[in-house]
Image 1 (cartoon, helix red, strand yellow):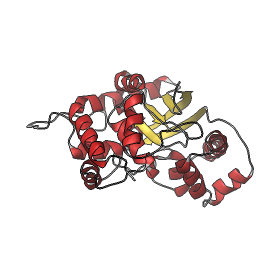
Image 2: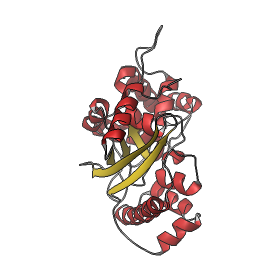
Image 3: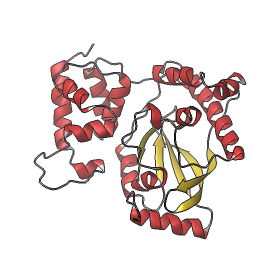
Length: 277
């Protein structure tokens, strides 16, 4: 149960009011009355419904640890603020045994300021938690996707639509490395309920179950993809995974191997998510 429902709602409203749209990577828009984020905008950033935001602010909901983590990322909270939010919600503050996917202010600034390179930030279970505009332009805007569909391993095995070209060699490499990486994550975070639930669901897919039962352990640190952009055509990218200090997040940067692909990426950086027609 939420420990302090009135305080939780007031705190969420206060932190929502103090965060201007530009600080959350959103356009300000015209004729805006709210000085901070609207409820609709917070809901979009956190991947929850507007009605749930209303119920949280009114003290009529008991948020899960996953929702609290999503709200902390959306509101750009510091580590101390995030921990306080967990306490107000009656949830244990993430400690040893659970992953701590906290997006630090410095990492958020890196995402906001880095141009020319698509960058995505993933948690220990390979759920996309943050991204820069060029990532959205290359792979498609993930802001409206449910949290589970932002998990790249689950989305792959579930056969969700993707812009990544499924070549046999790259597909096999991705499947083997992510399964081994998830087994390693499960050992590091044995008390992480969300991670256990993800793996349990993934084992319902025959290919993942086969790889999981092989008991291979490893880290997914690099990969290559061919992204079929709907207007610019195929763009080959190399992916490098970097660990984020003091966090259980991974920053994945996508670079291009040749000049032609680099030209397409530069054009995409200018166009963003808009179409060419």
